[in-house]
Image (cartoon, rainbow, N blue to C red; front, side, top):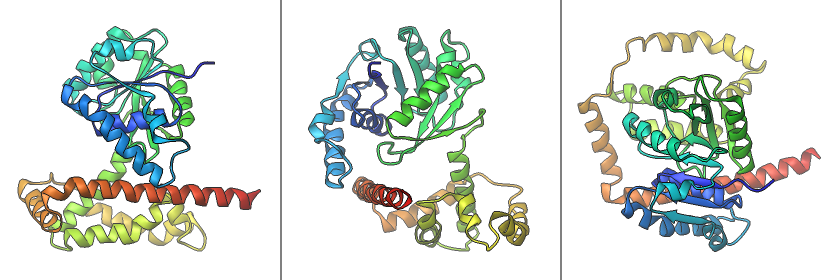
Amino acid sequence: MSAPRIAIVGAGLVGRGWAIVFAQAGLEVAVFDASADIRATVPCEVSASLRDMADADLLREAPEAIAARITIHSALAAALAECDYVQESVFERLDVKAAIATEIAALLPPQAIVGSSSSGIPASHFTERLAARDRFLIVHPVNPPHLVPVVELVPAPWTAPDTLARARTLMQQVGQSVVTVNREIEGFVLNRLQGALLNEAWALFEAGYASAEDIDRTVRDGLGLRWAFMGPFETIDLNAPGGVADYARRLGPLYHRIARQRTAPQPWSDDLIARVEAERRRRLPREKLAARGAWRDRRLMGLLAHRRRAAATDQQQDE
Protein backbone atom coordinates (compact mmCIF):
# COMPACT_ATOMS: atom_id res chain seq x y z
CA MET A 1 0.00 0.00 0.00
CA SER A 2 1.42 3.40 -0.99
CA ALA A 3 2.01 6.10 1.58
CA PRO A 4 -0.87 8.56 1.96
CA ARG A 5 -0.47 11.93 0.27
CA ILE A 6 -1.18 14.90 2.51
CA ALA A 7 -2.59 18.36 1.80
CA ILE A 8 -2.44 21.21 4.31
CA VAL A 9 -4.95 24.04 3.81
CA GLY A 10 -3.99 27.06 5.89
CA ALA A 11 -0.29 27.64 6.61
CA GLY A 12 -0.28 29.63 9.82
CA LEU A 13 1.25 28.37 13.06
CA VAL A 14 -0.97 25.29 13.22
CA GLY A 15 -0.76 24.46 9.52
CA ARG A 16 3.04 24.70 9.54
CA GLY A 17 3.17 22.46 12.59
CA TRP A 18 0.99 19.89 10.84
CA ALA A 19 3.27 20.00 7.80
CA ILE A 20 6.20 19.08 10.06
CA VAL A 21 4.20 16.25 11.70
CA PHE A 22 3.47 14.58 8.36
CA ALA A 23 6.81 15.29 6.69
CA GLN A 24 8.72 14.04 9.72
CA ALA A 25 6.79 10.78 9.38
CA GLY A 26 8.08 10.39 5.82
CA LEU A 27 4.99 11.63 3.94
CA GLU A 28 4.80 14.05 1.03
CA VAL A 29 2.99 17.24 2.03
CA ALA A 30 1.41 19.86 -0.25
CA VAL A 31 0.70 23.16 1.53
CA PHE A 32 -1.77 25.82 0.41
CA ASP A 33 -2.59 29.22 1.85
CA ALA A 34 -4.59 31.97 0.17
CA SER A 35 -2.11 34.57 1.41
CA ALA A 36 1.07 34.97 -0.62
CA ASP A 37 2.74 36.57 2.39
CA ILE A 38 2.01 33.55 4.57
CA ARG A 39 3.12 31.13 1.86
CA ALA A 40 6.42 32.97 1.63
CA THR A 41 7.14 32.43 5.34
CA VAL A 42 6.58 28.67 5.34
CA PRO A 43 10.02 27.41 4.18
CA CYS A 44 11.95 29.62 6.60
CA GLU A 45 9.68 28.95 9.58
CA VAL A 46 9.60 25.20 8.96
CA SER A 47 13.37 25.02 8.54
CA ALA A 48 13.94 26.94 11.77
CA SER A 49 11.62 24.60 13.71
CA LEU A 50 13.29 21.53 12.26
CA ARG A 51 16.76 22.81 13.18
CA ASP A 52 15.61 23.37 16.76
CA MET A 53 14.14 19.86 16.83
CA ALA A 54 17.40 18.43 15.53
CA ASP A 55 19.29 20.27 18.28
CA ALA A 56 16.93 18.63 20.81
CA ASP A 57 17.61 15.19 19.26
CA LEU A 58 13.98 14.81 18.16
CA LEU A 59 14.62 13.96 14.50
CA ARG A 60 15.67 10.67 12.94
CA GLU A 61 17.00 12.29 9.77
CA ALA A 62 18.42 15.59 8.58
CA PRO A 63 16.11 18.63 8.75
CA GLU A 64 16.76 19.30 5.06
CA ALA A 65 15.44 15.86 4.09
CA ILE A 66 12.22 16.45 6.01
CA ALA A 67 11.75 19.97 4.64
CA ALA A 68 12.21 18.65 1.09
CA ARG A 69 8.95 16.68 1.42
CA ILE A 70 6.97 19.91 1.85
CA THR A 71 5.87 21.78 -1.27
CA ILE A 72 4.06 25.13 -1.32
CA HIS A 73 1.15 25.79 -3.69
CA SER A 74 -0.61 29.00 -4.67
CA ALA A 75 -3.75 27.19 -5.89
CA LEU A 76 -6.01 25.02 -3.74
CA ALA A 77 -6.67 22.62 -6.62
CA ALA A 78 -2.96 21.94 -7.04
CA ALA A 79 -2.51 21.17 -3.34
CA LEU A 80 -5.50 18.81 -3.27
CA ALA A 81 -4.70 16.97 -6.49
CA GLU A 82 -4.43 13.24 -5.79
CA CYS A 83 -4.26 13.75 -2.01
CA ASP A 84 -5.55 11.12 0.40
CA TYR A 85 -5.92 13.32 3.46
CA VAL A 86 -6.54 17.04 3.94
CA GLN A 87 -5.74 18.86 7.19
CA GLU A 88 -7.68 22.13 7.14
CA SER A 89 -6.19 24.75 9.48
CA VAL A 90 -7.76 28.07 8.49
CA PHE A 91 -8.91 30.84 10.85
CA GLU A 92 -11.20 29.70 13.67
CA ARG A 93 -14.41 31.41 12.57
CA LEU A 94 -17.57 29.67 11.42
CA ASP A 95 -18.02 31.55 8.16
CA VAL A 96 -14.38 30.99 7.22
CA LYS A 97 -14.58 27.28 8.06
CA ALA A 98 -17.80 26.89 6.06
CA ALA A 99 -16.38 28.68 3.01
CA ILE A 100 -13.18 26.65 2.85
CA ALA A 101 -15.04 23.37 3.50
CA THR A 102 -17.23 24.13 0.48
CA GLU A 103 -14.16 24.85 -1.66
CA ILE A 104 -12.39 21.69 -0.50
CA ALA A 105 -15.46 19.50 -1.07
CA ALA A 106 -15.73 20.70 -4.68
CA LEU A 107 -12.11 19.67 -5.38
CA LEU A 108 -11.77 16.63 -3.13
CA PRO A 109 -10.43 13.48 -4.80
CA PRO A 110 -12.80 10.53 -4.35
CA GLN A 111 -10.44 8.69 -1.99
CA ALA A 112 -9.66 11.65 0.28
CA ILE A 113 -10.94 12.52 3.75
CA VAL A 114 -10.74 15.88 5.55
CA GLY A 115 -9.79 16.72 9.12
CA SER A 116 -10.41 20.22 10.45
CA SER A 117 -8.11 21.75 13.06
CA SER A 118 -11.13 23.46 14.64
CA SER A 119 -10.50 24.21 18.32
CA GLY A 120 -14.13 24.21 19.37
CA ILE A 121 -16.54 24.47 16.44
CA PRO A 122 -18.12 21.05 15.72
CA ALA A 123 -17.95 19.79 12.15
CA SER A 124 -21.75 19.64 11.92
CA HIS A 125 -21.81 23.45 12.04
CA PHE A 126 -20.03 23.81 8.70
CA THR A 127 -20.34 20.51 6.78
CA GLU A 128 -24.07 19.72 6.87
CA ARG A 129 -24.79 20.90 3.32
CA LEU A 130 -21.73 19.33 1.70
CA ALA A 131 -22.19 16.45 -0.72
CA ALA A 132 -19.07 14.83 0.75
CA ARG A 133 -20.00 15.56 4.37
CA ASP A 134 -19.44 11.91 5.39
CA ARG A 135 -15.71 12.41 4.68
CA PHE A 136 -15.26 15.37 7.07
CA LEU A 137 -14.50 15.34 10.80
CA ILE A 138 -12.64 17.36 13.41
CA VAL A 139 -8.96 16.53 13.90
CA HIS A 140 -8.06 19.03 16.61
CA PRO A 141 -4.40 19.36 17.63
CA VAL A 142 -2.71 21.32 20.38
CA ASN A 143 -0.50 24.18 19.22
CA PRO A 144 2.21 23.48 18.18
CA PRO A 145 1.13 20.05 16.85
CA HIS A 146 4.67 18.95 15.98
CA LEU A 147 5.66 19.24 19.66
CA VAL A 148 2.45 18.41 21.57
CA PRO A 149 1.20 15.10 20.20
CA VAL A 150 -2.39 14.83 21.46
CA VAL A 151 -5.09 15.12 18.79
CA GLU A 152 -8.86 14.93 19.22
CA LEU A 153 -10.98 13.14 16.61
CA VAL A 154 -14.58 14.37 16.69
CA PRO A 155 -16.98 12.98 14.08
CA ALA A 156 -20.12 14.80 12.99
CA PRO A 157 -23.36 12.79 13.18
CA TRP A 158 -22.93 11.97 9.48
CA THR A 159 -19.18 11.23 9.46
CA ALA A 160 -18.71 7.75 8.02
CA PRO A 161 -17.21 5.15 10.39
CA ASP A 162 -14.53 4.47 7.78
CA THR A 163 -13.56 8.17 7.78
CA LEU A 164 -13.04 8.10 11.54
CA ALA A 165 -11.12 4.82 11.34
CA ARG A 166 -8.84 6.11 8.57
CA ALA A 167 -8.14 9.33 10.43
CA ARG A 168 -7.27 7.40 13.60
CA THR A 169 -4.91 5.09 11.70
CA LEU A 170 -3.16 8.00 10.00
CA MET A 171 -2.73 9.97 13.23
CA GLN A 172 -1.24 6.94 14.95
CA GLN A 173 1.02 6.35 11.95
CA VAL A 174 2.48 9.87 12.22
CA GLY A 175 3.07 9.60 15.97
CA GLN A 176 0.12 11.53 17.40
CA SER A 177 -1.60 10.56 20.66
CA VAL A 178 -5.21 10.02 19.60
CA VAL A 179 -8.29 10.91 21.65
CA THR A 180 -11.69 9.93 20.23
CA VAL A 181 -14.58 12.16 21.29
CA ASN A 182 -17.59 9.88 20.88
CA ARG A 183 -20.08 12.61 19.98
CA GLU A 184 -20.01 16.32 19.31
CA ILE A 185 -19.75 18.86 22.11
CA GLU A 186 -18.62 22.48 21.80
CA GLY A 187 -14.96 22.84 22.78
CA PHE A 188 -14.44 19.05 22.64
CA VAL A 189 -12.52 17.54 25.57
CA LEU A 190 -9.27 19.50 25.67
CA ASN A 191 -10.69 23.00 25.58
CA ARG A 192 -13.48 22.16 28.00
CA LEU A 193 -10.86 20.97 30.50
CA GLN A 194 -8.65 23.98 29.77
CA GLY A 195 -11.67 26.28 29.95
CA ALA A 196 -12.63 25.03 33.41
CA LEU A 197 -9.15 25.89 34.71
CA LEU A 198 -9.05 29.22 32.86
CA ASN A 199 -12.45 30.32 34.15
CA GLU A 200 -11.41 29.57 37.72
CA ALA A 201 -8.09 31.38 37.19
CA TRP A 202 -9.83 34.51 35.90
CA ALA A 203 -12.36 34.39 38.76
CA LEU A 204 -9.65 34.04 41.42
CA PHE A 205 -7.73 36.95 39.92
CA GLU A 206 -10.83 39.14 39.62
CA ALA A 207 -11.74 38.55 43.27
CA GLY A 208 -8.23 39.48 44.34
CA TYR A 209 -7.23 36.13 45.81
CA ALA A 210 -3.90 35.97 43.94
CA SER A 211 -1.91 37.71 41.23
CA ALA A 212 -1.80 36.34 37.69
CA GLU A 213 1.82 35.32 38.28
CA ASP A 214 1.00 33.40 41.47
CA ILE A 215 -1.87 31.64 39.74
CA ASP A 216 0.52 30.73 36.92
CA ARG A 217 3.07 29.58 39.49
CA THR A 218 0.48 27.27 41.10
CA VAL A 219 0.03 25.46 37.81
CA ARG A 220 3.61 25.70 36.53
CA ASP A 221 5.34 24.55 39.72
CA GLY A 222 2.52 22.45 41.11
CA LEU A 223 -0.23 20.86 39.04
CA GLY A 224 1.70 21.10 35.79
CA LEU A 225 4.61 18.99 36.97
CA ARG A 226 2.34 15.98 37.46
CA TRP A 227 0.19 16.76 34.44
CA ALA A 228 3.28 16.60 32.22
CA PHE A 229 3.15 12.81 32.46
CA MET A 230 -0.25 11.83 33.89
CA GLY A 231 -3.85 12.99 33.65
CA PRO A 232 -6.35 14.06 36.33
CA PHE A 233 -7.80 10.61 36.99
CA GLU A 234 -4.41 8.94 37.39
CA THR A 235 -3.27 11.88 39.52
CA ILE A 236 -6.03 11.42 42.08
CA ASP A 237 -5.76 7.62 41.86
CA LEU A 238 -2.22 7.99 43.23
CA ASN A 239 -3.07 10.73 45.75
CA ALA A 240 -5.03 8.60 48.23
CA PRO A 241 -3.99 5.32 49.84
CA GLY A 242 -7.01 3.46 48.47
CA GLY A 243 -6.94 4.95 44.97
CA VAL A 244 -9.50 6.97 43.09
CA ALA A 245 -12.54 5.81 45.06
CA ASP A 246 -10.79 6.65 48.33
CA TYR A 247 -9.84 10.09 46.99
CA ALA A 248 -13.41 10.74 45.87
CA ARG A 249 -14.75 9.88 49.33
CA ARG A 250 -12.19 12.10 51.04
CA LEU A 251 -12.26 15.17 48.79
CA GLY A 252 -15.38 14.82 46.65
CA PRO A 253 -17.49 16.96 49.04
CA LEU A 254 -14.87 19.75 48.93
CA TYR A 255 -14.86 19.85 45.14
CA HIS A 256 -18.66 19.78 45.11
CA ARG A 257 -18.80 22.81 47.41
CA ILE A 258 -16.28 24.62 45.18
CA ALA A 259 -18.31 23.81 42.05
CA ARG A 260 -21.49 25.15 43.67
CA GLN A 261 -19.74 28.48 44.23
CA ARG A 262 -19.44 28.92 40.44
CA THR A 263 -23.10 28.46 39.52
CA ALA A 264 -23.33 31.86 37.75
CA PRO A 265 -20.13 32.21 35.71
CA GLN A 266 -19.50 35.65 34.26
CA PRO A 267 -17.82 36.55 30.96
CA TRP A 268 -14.31 37.92 31.14
CA SER A 269 -14.97 41.66 31.26
CA ASP A 270 -12.94 44.26 29.38
CA ASP A 271 -11.73 45.67 32.71
CA LEU A 272 -10.67 42.24 33.95
CA ILE A 273 -8.84 41.47 30.71
CA ALA A 274 -7.09 44.85 30.87
CA ARG A 275 -5.88 44.18 34.42
CA VAL A 276 -4.42 40.79 33.52
CA GLU A 277 -2.96 42.24 30.33
CA ALA A 278 -1.26 45.00 32.33
CA GLU A 279 0.32 42.50 34.72
CA ARG A 280 1.47 40.24 31.89
CA ARG A 281 2.97 43.13 29.91
CA ARG A 282 4.91 44.24 32.98
CA ARG A 283 6.45 40.77 33.11
CA LEU A 284 6.71 40.30 29.33
CA PRO A 285 6.66 43.34 27.02
CA ARG A 286 4.65 42.87 23.85
CA GLU A 287 7.75 43.06 21.64
CA LYS A 288 9.17 40.00 23.43
CA LEU A 289 6.12 37.74 22.91
CA ALA A 290 7.55 36.03 19.82
CA ALA A 291 10.88 35.35 21.50
CA ARG A 292 9.11 33.90 24.53
CA GLY A 293 7.03 31.73 22.20
CA ALA A 294 10.24 30.35 20.71
CA TRP A 295 11.51 29.74 24.25
CA ARG A 296 8.30 27.81 24.99
CA ASP A 297 8.83 25.63 21.93
CA ARG A 298 12.41 24.83 22.95
CA ARG A 299 11.22 23.88 26.44
CA LEU A 300 8.58 21.64 24.89
CA MET A 301 11.28 20.00 22.76
CA GLY A 302 13.38 19.31 25.84
CA LEU A 303 10.39 17.86 27.68
CA LEU A 304 9.42 15.74 24.69
CA ALA A 305 12.97 14.40 24.38
CA HIS A 306 12.98 13.54 28.08
CA ARG A 307 9.62 11.75 27.79
CA ARG A 308 10.88 9.66 24.88
CA ARG A 309 14.01 8.65 26.78
CA ALA A 310 11.95 7.84 29.87
CA ALA A 311 9.48 5.77 27.85
CA ALA A 312 12.32 3.78 26.30
CA THR A 313 13.80 3.14 29.76
CA ASP A 314 10.41 2.06 31.13
CA GLN A 315 9.94 -0.34 28.21
CA GLN A 316 13.37 -1.90 28.77
CA GLN A 317 12.58 -2.41 32.45
CA ASP A 318 9.23 -4.02 31.63
CA GLU A 319 10.81 -6.52 29.21
